[in-house]
Amino acid sequence: ISKGIQKEPEIVCLPERNFVGLRTVFFGVESEKNNMAEKLPVLWGKFLPRMNEVPNLIQGAGYGLIRQLNDRSGQLEYFSAVEVDSLPSVLPEFMQSVRIQSQKYAKFLHRGEVKNLNHTVNYIYSAWLLNSNYSHELLFDIEEYGEKYHPTSIESEINYLIPIGNTNSEPASA
View 1: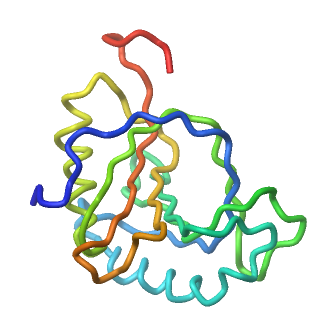
View 2 (view 1 turned 120 degrees about the vertical axis):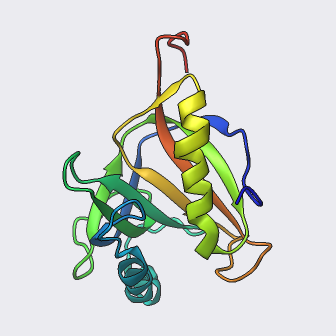
View 3 (view 1 turned 180 degrees about the vertical axis):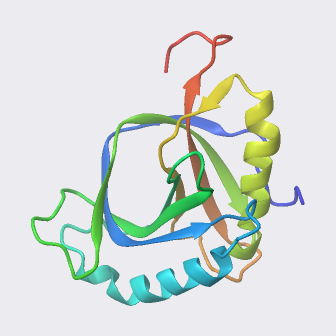
């Protein structure tokens, strides 16, 4: 399970960023209603052919933006998205914009096929975060699919970033 997982993240502070993409809601792997495998590939299948319709597109990467809808539902929202240098005044049909505020993140590198990304995410939340001096901020997690990404290659690389805050055991400096 730990193959291809970076054990210690790079801690980075990202500036405010803007994204445009398609949205879906799903139940994650920890839910008995898990429908991630039915929802996310379909969403990406709809978005990829339309990426270049997005005005103000910053070329180079695709992004998955994930956050919990509320503490009790077990549902997550997910955007397949691209970054834009400014939010367009008119969006392509069915697309939505997302602004992510400046935030500190733990950035992990996942190596291998995308189908195994859940192993990295499980490690981050069930091992690393529990033993770190950080807390998860209830903001978007970010999947970053750059030039080294290929969906079925064992050489593929994906960055997975979680928004973090300081706990009482760490000085409050970023």
